[in-house]
Each structure stands twice: as C-alpha cells, then as structure tokens.
Amino acid sequence: MMQLSQDTADPAFAASPSQAQLVPDESFREITVITHDKSRLVKLVGEELATPAPFSQAEKTIETIILHVLKFPVIAITLQVSLFPEQNTPGQIDQFNLNITNVGKKVVYFDAPTKWGESASQGNIAALRTDIPLPELTSTHQQFVQLNSDNFQAASPSFVGPKVRLDPNEGVTLGFQQKFNWPPGRYKVDIDLVLSLVGEDDQPLMSVGVVSAPKNISISTK
Picture 1 (cartoon, rainbow, N blue to C red):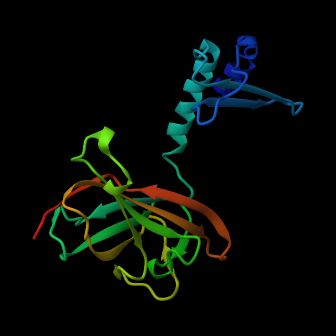
Picture 2 (tube, helix red, strand yellow):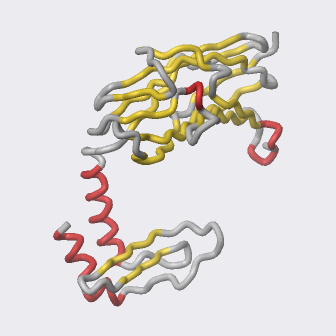
C-alpha cells in the first residue's frame, strides 16, 4: 500500500494522459485516487490510448495487492463439477454433481437448489457446438438448461429447509440429473451459478457468480 501511495502521488502519474471518452463496449482500465482533501484523480486507459508508464507502474502494484488479498478471502465460494458425462444418446438420463465449497472465513447460507429460479439465486447450463465452424454458428447451435427443483436429486451432506448452510472450509455436493436431448454433435458446456449469500443473522452478505471449468460432451444418435 505504501508503494501504491508513492506510485499515485508521483507527479508523473498526475501529469500522465488519460483517455477522454469511451465508445460503447470498449474495454478499459481505470485508476481513481481519492486524495486527503477528498478530491478525485481519475486515469482512464481504453483501447485508443497506449498505456502510460506511470499508469502501468501503479497498475502492477494494484495487481500485486489483489493477488495477495485473494489468499485471504472473507466471503468466497468455489464451484467444481464432477461426473459430468462425456457422451450421451437421446433419451439417456445423465447424472452429475456440483461441488460447492466455502473457502471464506464466515458462515454462509444460500438458497437450496429447489428454490433456484424462484429467488435471487439461479443455476444454468449453457452449451455451444464445437464441431461447427465459427462463421456458421447461429443460435440454433446453442442449448440452455436451468438447474432447479426439476432436475435436482439430492445433497451430500443432506440439508433441511429452504437454505444450505456452509461453515468455513465446508463443502456440499449437489446431485442433478438431466436428459440432454440435443441435436447430435460435440458441445462445450459451461455451468454457472448466481447465489445470494446471507449470514447467520439472515442479513445479505453478497451476491456471487461462479462459473465451472468448461466440460465437453458428444451427443450421438441412437
């Protein structure tokens, strides 16, 4: 933090150029410094501005701080998918697991899968054909599945009630089953969850989004 203060207090940082405006959907990085007198110094680097050296120095220091802080999360969960099928034929029912772990320091609760889609929490499977050339891909080559009470099977350890409790370093395995009645082909599959986390006092902590590592599945004809 001392290094970051030095980086952003450097007159060269204050004098460095900043991109005046952005076009829609333009990617950018921004550093905002709030000084002791509450004034704001904003430096913006989009796609049209070569990164100034003072900005780059401050950015490197910020990234170092982020990597350090990530080692000590207060509220955080992880998602891993296991037993996801690599092959499927139409009509076949496949089972897979979502392994959710509390890697933070606080007890967290989230909505049970039977409530996903009815509350602020939701789970989705998104699949995209990988055997179709990119220029030929259309919306017909995508598939979406909601995860909710329709395909949720059981949890280990089991829970009672509308919420799942996870103590620090505790995990839960949520089992699902699904018929992947998709057109034959090869697909890349991502599973994403949006979970509204609350604490022991039932007060909101944060809403988190987690995405699985990609899975591959081949759908064949009967």
